[in-house]
Length: 73
Image (cartoon, rainbow, N blue to C red; front, side, top):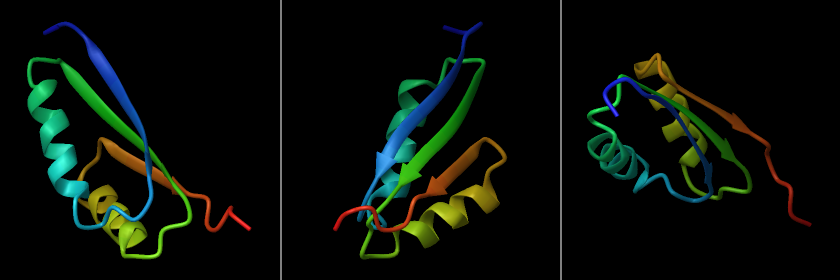
């Protein structure tokens, strides 16, 4: 795994309180990888998930996200 690069892709909704913890869990699982990048798709959050994603994107060059706003009717 030391020569491997990974893109971790996920979905997010109402996870502001657990987002950083979950990122840290994945980082531990992939700690031997040469490179890790993140892409998260968010929609329909009613908490501070978008703000938490924004903060992570500003802090980390390997983290990006897109918010699709409200998709449910």
